[in-house]
Length: 291
Image (cartoon, rainbow, N blue to C red):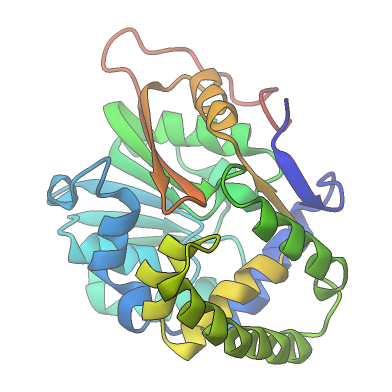
């Protein structure tokens, strides 16, 4: 069974998706407050990989955008981060990571083009796979970039636990993917104000996404709340993965020791390992879930 898809068919849409995010990252360059904090990174990956294990590690971050995850990784003690960003947002990424000098290497390319000879300890793909039409190609590239025994860290939207959200986002996306940037920003601002009432109500009642709203969304600034909504409504393609679909996808790409964490009832965090011995021969292209 294929992951649930929202939006038009992904065939030939990769360039459009890159443009979508390029516009987004050029307009929203800030990673202030909780949104860019080490605490939030711990909330995403900590239940699977303690942040202390990133200390001294060499990491490749796929889809780095404005450099938010790159800066988190460095704050956790990563020795070096190779940051990949295929869109025009790469210039924002360079500005936001320039202070770290040689600890960061920026590559203007997609995840499928991740260099195979990096031998890194970790590859991170945080909030990337939902927007990639062919996730198998990206994951195989990640596999080859890892050293034997290296680990992949993934976070993505779940198919489980948020059916109401899927329906609401799907309805909005029938027209938001066609809105001019300024109009979509205004709509996200209005939606955020409306969600203030939901935040208040969710403190008292067991509403859908209550845990996420109280532990994450409520702690974001107004700007990063708008960005979070924009992230859902702007890209021309997005999909949600069930637990079984994600596990199967990672296994088919050669990963072992796959573990998942249900994050706040609406998303999956996952860790998967490139085998330390008898590594699986992974083809450079081909099928798998989503092909």
